[in-house]
Image 1 (cartoon, rainbow, N blue to C red):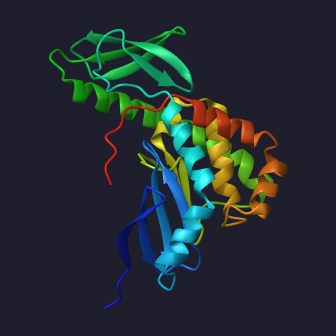
Image 2 (image 1 turned 180 degrees about the vertical axis):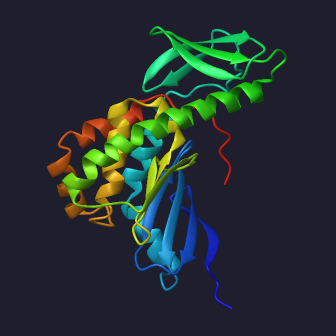
Length: 244
């Protein structure tokens, strides 16, 4: 029977490291929100000592990533009540909950208010579900024009795309299937950040790795991609229960 993956934990220079051995060719090291969890995916043949050396080599980068997560503003858990702050396309809105007998719906009022119409007695979870559905609908409407613009410019085409909640990535690309996924949280970020992630994932169809060629392609087609990435990293993170 083939073992798909094996997980172990090491401590390197006082940092807990999750090591995942699986059928891959190269070592991949990542630092993930909200607290800077360190995860290393490695081929089966890589020894523990080689993993330790790889982590030590990246200690400065790991600490910088963790520092960014620590200082990034984060919302408290949303209670879905009047006056609470919610975000759409980088703009902060004040929530206004209205009781009414009709179907639940969401509407923006002016530049400051987000109106949520719910049946009397609705729970916070029900309100949040309606708002998330609205975010998903809005995001799905924004993506096709971006794909229509960027696919011919890059000379690539996706077979399918989708939106889902993701814990550790803003987007992902399955190169073999030519399928991309985009994080639902992007509905809350500036539209320039959404465009950056769309281009990022499409460029992976030209280059799988985050190497010099990938960086050059991003710079060629989206010269300000690093500024957009910085804006995304600096934006407010939503409240999540992060479990692994």
